Image (cartoon, rainbow over all chains, first blue to last red; front, side):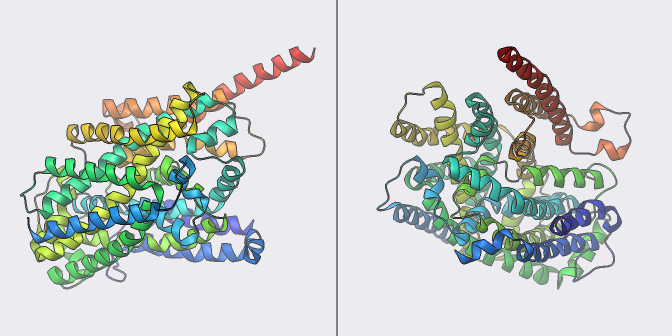
Length: 65
Length: 490
């Protein structure tokens, strides 16, 4: 269950929170804020998927092969 | 012939060579030709899937939209990322089933799940129809690359003919093995070229990223965010959702999922793929950098912004390298699309009506259909004038209509019947077709709605209608099926 909650976070971040992030300032790493916001979620997705991969029992059996 | 063109053609020859090499010593039956014998590991599946995803659409379309639309372009970065999350959970299930049943194509999956060959025909038709605009984007892209890199000495029309010929020969020679090898070369090139352009151009012309964005914001206030109306926040949310659902519904991406060696491949890819998406960011930078440097490219010509800015900035030999990278981004997906369409027509449509055809005949037919499909796409390429991204969005609206019945088929107890699945797909596709042909938006169909709803991607309407039809027809056919069962029992 915890895995699904983690997997849902980027959907919330990108789809639900976008109205609050839709602005140019402040610039972060030289990017307009809304672009930074999306980039941040892309990176977080990767990290979250890494955590989910570690937690997923389906991958334990696969490693021994 | 200038040096830029020479370099581009050398790369074309190299990819043909790789295609022929990859095929040597392998007996090519239909399964070999299309799913590579299901023997590809993480790296190759990654390259194949990345190969399809990072296409001319990304290279020219992504920069083109950044150039002409600004903020709405960010959707391209968002949807892939959400699609990978879903792929983690969905693809292993699909792969396992496909392996067990020895499936080759996407429509085999529907045939097997819903036990209806005619549903397979329907799914294949949707697939082929959706693939055509996708193929057109690749041909248009290739055409622009060759003609821009020739500095006008080759007309776009001639360039598109040459490109189509190249893709067709490539596919007929190599099948999927060629795609995988060329994908490897292409990914390295595109990474290098895009990173370089995306970093160099903003610094060269503006002194950095933030100064570039500040200059654009000053010249065009509001351009860098999602607008209030039109491609607004509700457009963004609905489009990201739709395209994320449609991501793996393309017959060719579904098909390349079959080529994995085991299911862990997908789970690992889901970790790396989102990061790989960031390449797009640099593509956007190129488009943004072009706004104030090569102004005046209207409408679909925005797709030329990357090439125009490159020819203005660099020596011809480097334009050649950029063009070669662009060539590969069209060649790999273009070949996958062509192959997918040809296989669908031969194996999933023709074979249903000619059940006695041998595998060899089907294999041969698939090969001969490659140039036919290419010619059809070529015809439409010369007809329409839409921008690359707009074309692709239309294809997405079509394939996404397959998502509901696919999703339900993955559950152990699926209440959707084959009639329900067919009804949903037909109604959904018909809605997309009507919307596209009549050029309507939710705003024109329902003018009384508030702006938030008016801006929703029209694909959502088709999807909702699709799901309603699917459920209603399933309920009706299901109860009649139960009744006839009871009648038999009595």
